[in-house]
Structure formats: C-alpha cells, structure tokens
Amino acid sequence: MRTLLQIRLGTEASNGSITDGTMGQKFERIMAALKPEAAYFYASGGRRAMTIVVDLPDEAALPSVCEPFWVEFNAEVDAYPCMDGDGLREGLSRLGG
Image 1 (cartoon, rainbow, N blue to C red):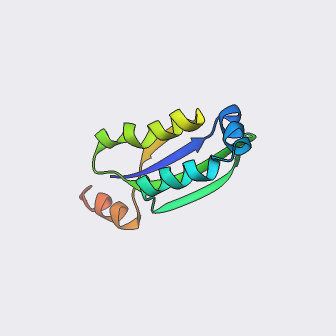
Image 2: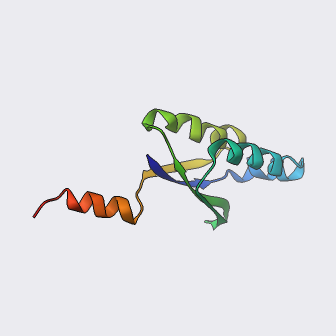
C-alpha cells in the first residue's frame, strides 16, 4: 500500500539532535529501514518537515513507520494512502461506464 507521510519534526527534539550531532545518524537509520521511494525535506510553519512515500505491506505496518518519528523527534505525522498514475487508471476503470 503506497502511503504518503507528511512529517513535521518537533522543534525542541530536533534542535537537541542537531546540537548533540545525532540528527544525521537517526535519519540514516530511519530511512534505511523505511526505504522510501521518494523523500523531500523543507520548512513548514517554521518547523523542519518532510514528505516521504513508502510502500507498506498493509495498514498494520503504519505504527512501525510512524513510531521512529514520534519517539526520536516528537513529530506530527499525517499518513495518506496514495497511488501513482497506473493506480489511478486502474481505479477509474473499476468505476464502469
């Protein structure tokens, strides 16, 4: 299940990771585990933020994807099932008519 995650890092928690030099290590570990097909990093509402797209085997995988961001960075995480153009074409073909 392709899932788009919008993640906004907690400022205090991420500042601590920047200050103690662990931010890069934490991100490398999380991204290696998630293997996102796309990842974009930016500022949102004055906070460090990112959008990543991951392929989850099922909805039960969602907690294991969100927890590292909650635990390490006190992040806000929004998850949206999504599709590419092929998925949209398939979905539209199922509408009939």
